[in-house]
Length: 123
Image (cartoon, rainbow, N blue to C red; front, side, top):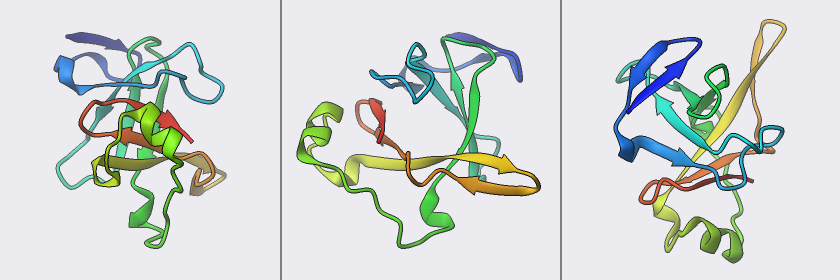
């Protein structure tokens, strides 16, 4: 499928790369479909590009690259909502923000993605 973005122009992604946030993201509840753009094979930062709003994209990362002991407590009802039968099927990301000249990760609002169903939620 072709996706129109303001940062990257029109890009093609496979349908199975669409990540769905049924509840949207904090402050962006109307945007529910996203794709993960990887700038390179060894990248530690990625773009989470909205498929519903061409100008909406977030820089995200795996927080354990920077805080190895970081973990997200997931309640049984959240696992059920995400369709997770086991935690090994989940990938956690955090949204990266730039404050002055420093990058920070939002550890209080992590993104949990079911890698099998591509369903996700911001916790």
